[in-house]
Image (tube, rainbow, N blue to C red; front, side, top):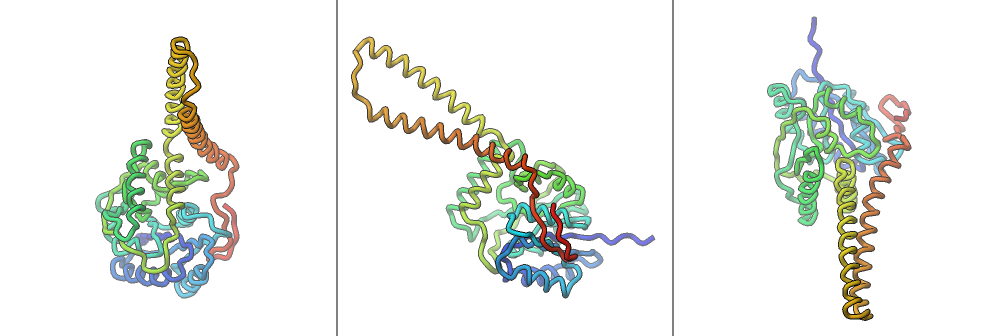
Length: 320
């Protein structure tokens, strides 16, 4: 009986990547032919509502190579939804997530595959040891974020970790079994467990195009990660509220004593105004924290689809 050939699924989320796609495909084919003789491949491109000619480029690749598959969304649903769609569509024994801009070097894939096979891991992830090419302020806040979330969360988030990783089908099935609407994949990868080994590499700049991650988008993504994997902010707001109640009680006692001893002077209203503004700010901050968790719950209970498919290589429209 002939042994079934192993297959690697390469999942590539794409948003306005028309310039990078041909370069990515050429590099992947070079690596496949050079390092993966006897192993089957499939490339699954997820068009996340691109405004440029990304979908046309993907269709062209499909026309000349049957290994190319694709899922095109009805609009932009975000990278998290694109990764979910790619993982669900993957048919390989091993699945890797890669960016189309070649910041995730395909040349590492053979080392990742050998590690997975020979050292019996379930996942081989990659992490950057430097952030060369990034704005200093962005790198600073990224480091602060990882320190904070690792103190708040029960699951470990690795500083510098990329979405670029090679996983077994078993691990991928565990990830896609979690259908939550508000997704933070770096946390989900850690949450499902499984044995993971990290490979370090120097940061690589984009081969073409511009990054889609602005500082504001990264900030919102960080908030998503904190609210998805920690309830510490809720506890913190409760502790702050209790602390201010105790401070207020102490001040009430002091004011009563002062009034009885020295009368009731009217001086001090500027400091009182500052205190009122400060306490009001704390209240609004705490309400904002509660609102973030409430909004996530609101979105979850709607049970809306994570993404909506408009077109695939099989030309079928379906809704997930």
